[in-house]
Image 1 (cartoon, one colour):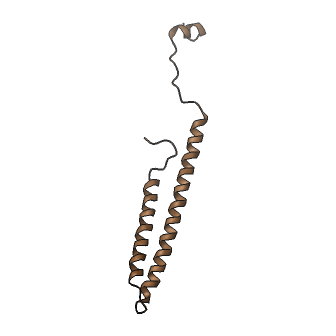
Image 2 (cartoon, one colour):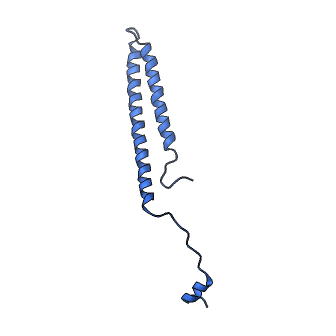
Length: 102
């Protein structure tokens, strides 16, 4: 069971963004190695892939920061009150003293 307010798929989504950033960066590196004056399109493809990888990496970092900030907010909220306690059972003697039963 998770704490109230936690998002179960957040960590998987963040890891997926980091993975996509790494794959796009690797693709940009491969395309850049094939760039030549004849194959100028690989340079353009490498630049677009590198830009996408950088944007995805920055997005993953921002989402990580948002997740951590969200967890801090939940922690601060849960820290405000006492831990829940169960109420003690009322005995028959106490009910008779208060006049609720005879």
